[in-house]
Length: 173
Image (cartoon, rainbow, N blue to C red):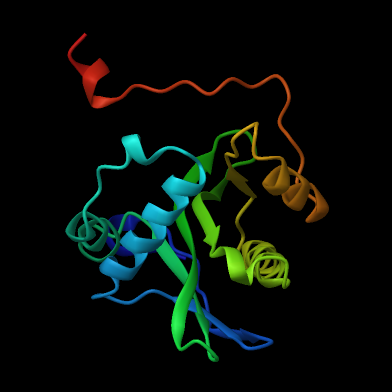
């Protein structure tokens, strides 16, 4: 469970689901992750907020080791068709580390084939096996397809909690 600098990581072994292979990203794959993140931003109408470069992603994941990326490879198209970006946290309430899904994206032609369900199911199993206390993520309220999908996987909306954020622009205030 321990990663570099005392950080956490999920011990993740590659698995196959139908025609797909899900595996941890490797150094040098920042470019493909970047392309998928651009597509996700377009899908969510948030392209104006995306500032990361492929080099930034490569640095964050493989030099600073701030998280992990799981990639979905399609044998038929011979390409990466999805990504799940993970970071790690700690819950003072349950006294255990947690997993935060920063981004989860499957390209449109490959949705509704069970890939996302297989990935979340595997992540839940690994979290339990490796002693993580919870898995959290955010979803846009207007993304009803994703909300329905997450609920079908057993997730619940955390009523009563508000998300607060400070950005670089706020640091100077």
